[in-house]
Length: 433
Image 1 (cartoon, rainbow, N blue to C red):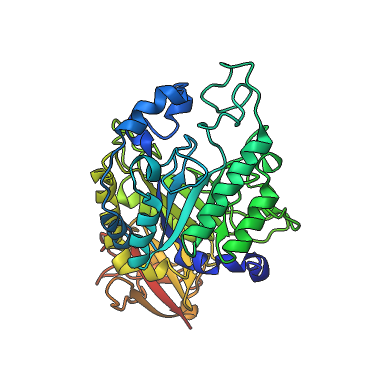
Image 2 (image 1 turned 90 degrees about the vertical axis):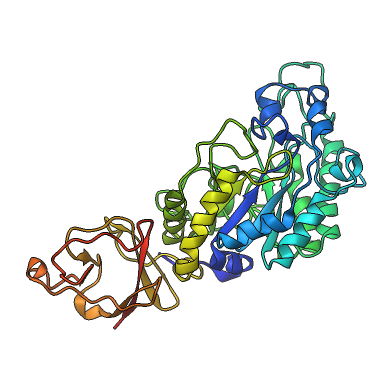
C-alpha cells in the first residue's frame, strides 16, 4: 500500500495523528428525545415542532463535556452547529431561528471556548439541509418532513443557496480558527450543484484555510464520492466519512493508494438523544473498533447525544470513562500510529508507529502468543505497554517446530495458558532488531 500523498492530504496530518474524536449531536430534538431525525420520521411540520423549540431551555456545562472528551483520550470534538431541523446553536444575522435569538445563548461560542481551553481541537457540523426554510425543496425531496404533503410547493434554490452560503460565512468568520468543518450531506436530487459547493469551498478556504472538511458535499456515509479518484472535485473533501460501519479494508483510492477516513459511530443506536435507547456499546467494543480503525489507517469519531437539559447521558459517560482508563495506559499505540503491514492475527490487530510495532491482543492464546508475521530474529525487545515491563520470548517444546515464527511467553511457564493482564486489550510494544 502506498503512503498517503501529503501534498493532497497535508491539512489532515494532525488529525490522522490524533485518531480519536468526539461527535456531539445536540439540539431541540433532544426534547421529543426520539433522535435527531424525528421531524422527518414523524412528518412534523415547522409548526408541529415549535413545542420542542419552546421547551429547549438547557443549562449545559461545556467544561464538563470537555472533561469527558479529554478523559476518554479524545483529541478533537465536533458539535452540531445546525442539524437538519434548521434550529441553529449559533448567532446568525440571517435568521431568528437560533438559540442566540430565542435564548440569548450562543452555544457554539460557549462550546468552542470550553474545548479550546481544555486543549481539544474543535470542529463544527453544519447541515446542508434546512427543513425550517420555506425556500428549501419540500414535496419531491427524499427526506423533507413535508415530502408529498405540499405538491404545490415551489422551492427557490437561488434564495436557499444565498442563505446557506451566508451562514457558512458566519461560522467561518465569527468564531476564530476552526480545525474541522463537517458538512452533511448529499443525496439523490440534492448535491454539489444545489448546494453551490464550489462557493462553499471558496468561502472555507478564504476564511479557514487550515480547516479540514469531510466529503459529504458530494457524498454520504455510504458514498465516498470523487475523493477516491486521482482527480477529485474541488469539493471532494479531505477525508471520507463511513457511518456506523468500519470498511473491511479501510478506504482505498481507485489507484490503490490510501485515502484518509474516519468512521463515525454512535454509542447507542441514535445520534441525537433518545430516552428509550439504552443499548450502550461496551467499552471493550469501542476500544476494539478504535484499534481496528487505526490498524486500517482510519480515525474513530464517537458520538454522544446530550439530553434536553444539556447533560451527556450517564451511559455514554460511563463507557467513555472506561475507554479513557485504557487510553491512559495505551494511547501510544493509537496516536501517531497506523497500519503495520503485517497479516491480521487471530488474536486481535497490529498497529505501528514511533518506530515500534504494537500487538493488540483481544483474546488470550492457548500457550504462547504467536507474533504473526515476525521471525524470532526480527524481535529485539517486547514490553507490555501499560507498565513498560519486559515480556520474554517463548522457548518451549510446544513451539520447537516453528523456528520461522516468533512466540511470546504469556506467563512464567511459557507452555501454560494465562488470562490477559487487560481483558479489554493487552498491548505489547515490539522493538525490531
